[in-house]
Length: 120
Image: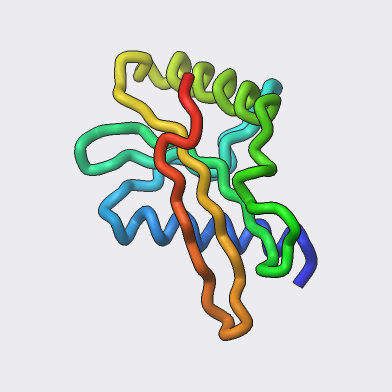
């Protein structure tokens, strides 16, 4: 499995994880010129969740969340702002999460959600 495929599968695993928690997947790979948001979800209480998914091998020297640099956070924030404007949801409660996804030798995936990993 190449790196792109691992990333796609990681995003799908993270989306299923959120859906099992009762979230609705609103958008996947929402893209604007300023950036992309991997997952946009709505929690049962109405909170919009903008999630950056990072998939890494277990032997990686860095944690997946470390790859969400301040520059990456700024791109996500700008893209989320555009999403909110385009969908007339600027007044909605929101949160920015990072999903750390790791494939395991057993064929299963480990998912760790960092809720509120960064703020607007």
